[in-house]
Image (cartoon, rainbow, N blue to C red; front, side, top):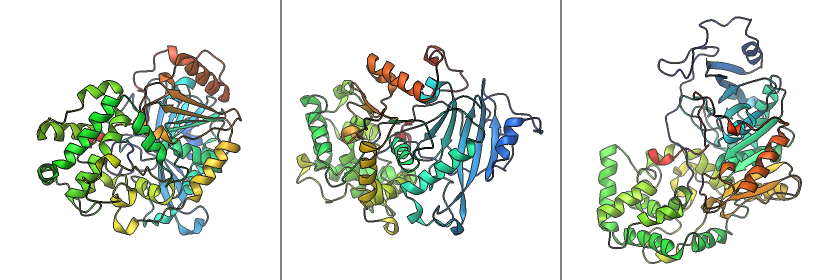
Length: 471
C-alpha cells in the first residue's frame, strides 16, 4: 500500500521562456537576464514544438532547466484537449548519455538539480518527468479514465522523441518503486525509445489476488524475535484502541486534519495505520532497528510515539492522502496492491477489507480492478524484453513480488540486508561491478567510471525515494 515521496503543494508555473528563478531559489550563478540567439542550447530547446522553458539556473558544470511540455490529454484522441506536463533537464553535454528519470509521482514544488545513481555512473544528462495527474501535471477538467500506464508511457515517448533532436547520445531510463514500475511500462510500450532500463525496487503484482508472497515475506524476514515484537506492537495498539483513537482525534483537530473525504473516520484511519506499521518498518528500517521496537509492556505514550515514527499518524488523513490520490487510483484500477491476511490480528480488527486502495480514495474515484495490464507487462518482461536491470533489497516488502527478467541481456540483483532504498552501490562487490559495467556498456561509455570522483557540491545525489513520513 505504501510508497514514499514527500507530499507538497501544486506548483504555479512561471512564465514560459523566463530564465529567472524566484528569490532565494538559485542553485548557482544566475543565468543572464536576457538570452540572445547566441545561446544555441536554449534556442534548440525553444524550437521544440510544445516545449516551454520555465526557468534556468547554472550549477557548477551544468545547466538546469525547468520545462513544460504540451501533451494530449488522451493520446488516442488528441482532439480531447491538452495539458502541461512538468519536467526538468540537467544538461552536461549534447553528446553525453541522457538518463530519463521517471519518479512515478510529482516533481518537487520548486525543482532543484540532482543526479540519480545512473546519471552519476554515466556522468550524463538527466531528464526528470512528473507523472500525469500529479501536482500541476493534471488536465483540467480531469477525466480519470485517462490515467493509465499506456497514457503515461505515451507522454514519455513524446518527450524522448522531442529531446532526441538535441541529445545524440544513448538514453537510459531509471526510476525507483512506482518510478521503476513506470520505467518498465514505458519500455513495454515503446521498446525503441531508450537503450536500457535500470528499475529499482519495482513491485510486480502480476495476479492481484494471489498475494501469498507478501505473507511469506513477513513470516521469514529478520529473526523470529523481531517478527514477534512487531506483531505484538500491532496487537497492543489494537487492544488499546479506545485510548489511542482519542489521541489521534486530538492530534488531527490540533493540526487541521480530517478523515471525511477518504477513510471516513479516525477509527478507520487508526486501524489502517496500525495495519501498515510492520510494512513501513521493513520498508524504511533494517534488522538493526529491531532493538528499538517497544515491548508489550510499553506505555501508551511509547507505543503511540513509536508507531508515529515508523508509519506516521498523519498519513491516513484526508490531507495526507490527497497528494497520493493518483497513485491509489492507479493501484485500484491497474497496478494492484498487497492483500495481506493479518492472521495474527484476528478478533482485533473492526473493518474487514480495509487494507486496499479503494478505502483511501474519494467515493467518486473508487474503481474496479482490471487484471489484464499487469499480466501483459509481466509476460512481456519475462519473454520479450531486453536490456533491463532490476535491483531489489533483500528485506524490502515491495520486493516480495518481483519482475523476472528475460535472458535477453537482462539482469536481477538483490542487495543484502537492504530495504526499499536498495541501489547498485548497496550490492555485493561482484554484483556492483557487473551491474555498473552493464549499465555503462548499454550507454556506450568507455572511459573510467566517475564514481571515484566527487560530484559537484551544487548537484547533490538523488536516491529517488524521499521519505514521505515528513508530512
